[in-house]
Amino acid sequence: MTAIGGHVPATRRAGALGVHSVGEFVLAVPAVERAQDFYDAFGLDVRPEGNQLLLHTLGDGYRWGRVVEGARKAVHHHAFHCWEEDLPRFRRHLEANGVRLLDPPPGFDSNGLWFRDMDGTLLEIRVGVKTQPDEKTPMALPPTETGLRNAPYRRNANRAAPRRLSHILHFTPDVNAAVAWYSRILGLRLSDSSAGLVAFLHAIHGSDHHVMAFAKSNAPGLHHLSWDVPTLNDIGLGAMAMADRGYDRGWGFGRHVLGSNYFHYVRDPWGSYCEYSADMDFVPGSMDWEGRDHPPEDGFYLWGPTPPPDFVHNHEADAP
Image (cartoon, rainbow, N blue to C red; front, top):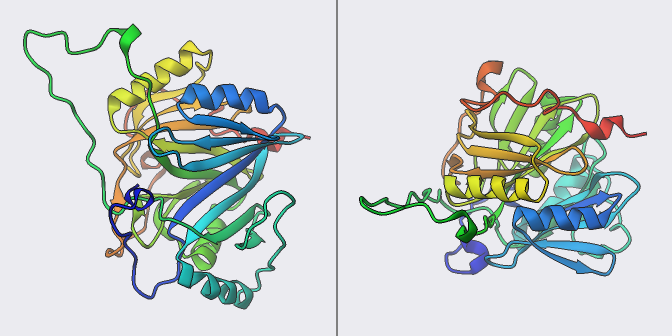
């Protein structure tokens, strides 16, 4: 996340119109205090402010999300970031494609562009820093030494601390239609897909293998938020800490095929997930990645335990 730190100029693909990052997510949940406990246990810096929870990463203090009170768990909106000079271009692009621009929702004053996607999810495009990395970060593998206890005592283990939001996965009734819409309107591009069941999209200015993904369901909904951590050990420490706090439902440890990342998913109080993720594939901004469709056996995971029976169940579709 060098662009946030201001150390390295963010990369971009010259002349191409496309968002470069997810800037923020906002979730509505029926019990904000439960969200505070869950995201604190997960390793985020949770800051109550008025009737909202602000979700920051510990290392750099960036605000990745907010949680607001709602009658049921649902996505309130997502904000995508673009370059300052591209915001007027996006306005013209949206209008030319028949996308209706909206006023910001109450309590979210912004000079960005507000509109709804093909499933009705509220989105914003605004000017912001590039939160996606500009190159693949090598996964650290600390050396071990002979004649020493190389693992720390459990009581002394460091807390897992996500470095950044990697991606968001949504349910949608039509995966192919979602890919077409997000490609045409936001400028994302297909990385990989599998038989109309799941698809992964990257940002054109250099990003992880996917910043947005979509899975087949009978209705829209949030499946998971994925958070990048530095090492496999951090995945394990995160899973352990969550289980110690009572959040022991989930899936992992394993490795995906598409994206290649190692993972552990922890179920939140509302039936969706947060994922600890490490070592995802990276698509540089200078590359035209070939998006391919893969058979279902390659669309899920390379190895790991059997997923829970309801892992891909959309609990938001059950809500009245």
